Structures are given as structure tokens and as C-alpha cells.
Length: 78
Image (cartoon, rainbow, N blue to C red):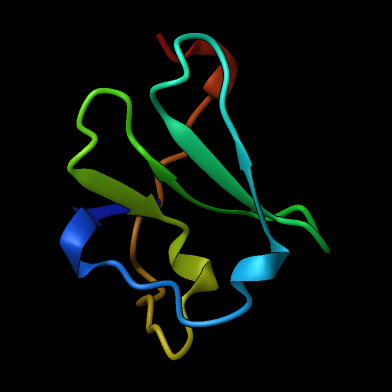
């Protein structure tokens, strides 16, 4: 996931195939593909001016092989 300013995000295709999920205080919004279940993006609870995007859902993105990708344990997230 990579956070970007909300105004810089545009969902380009298939809005009808995206499902929204909220829980707890219903502040954060989490979005998933209805077909395959991939977690596409979310609007953050701590900073709703940001959207975190699953960069593997972005077409034509290059991730260098030596890039370290942090693994997040969602069960332990406060």
C-alpha cells in the first residue's frame, strides 16, 4: 500500500465491481474487488485526506527488485 493525497486518486475503471467495507467507528473505508477479493485501496481513519493504494493494482508500475516491501500484520494494528 502506498499513501497519496486523496485529490490525486482517480479510480479509472470498473467502479461497479468495487465493494466498500467499514467497521468499528465507520470512519475508514476499505475497498475490495467483488470478483477476486483483492484489497484495492482504502481511505485512512487517522488521515482521511490520504488514500492508500495497493500498488500492485496500478497498471504499468515498476517496482525495482531490490525494493523492500513491509509486511503489515492487520490483526496487530491498533
